[in-house]
Length: 136
Picture 1 (spheres, helix red, strand yellow):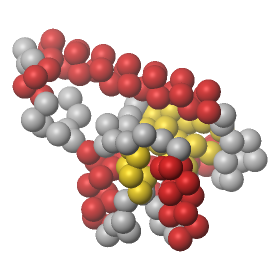
Picture 2 (cartoon, helix red, strand yellow):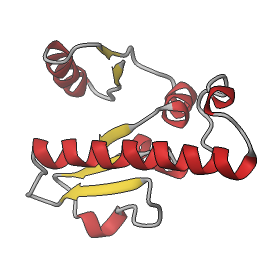
Picture 3 (spheres, helix red, strand yellow):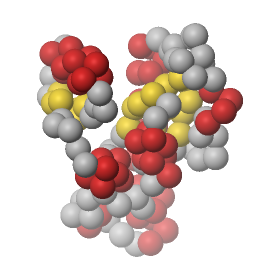
Picture 4 (cartoon, one colour):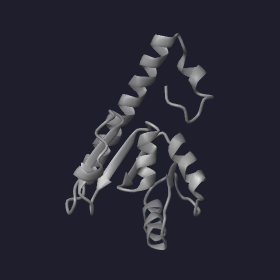
């Protein structure tokens, strides 16, 4: 499923509009901070603007696409991990095609990383499935 978090009423409204256009999308209720952190920690993929929740997901090494629209990318871009893709810049938001390509790249990389982990450690992918939210 696609879970849409929000911080303000304006963001909640925007999330509802996005959810109406996507299958399997759900607008989450207002989350306490620790629940939001747990959500970011366990996400299969995070796409978000330059906010704390996006950076928290990146810190947990989750596949993360950081979107820059209103803030300069150079200030906070995550360029320290192959699990992070930065798109756009201040006044130049990324297009849908860029985001879709980044999703494909990160999910392919995540699958490859899981396969490499399993190969190195003699683990099967099926054995990893019960360990939700943990990166290999």
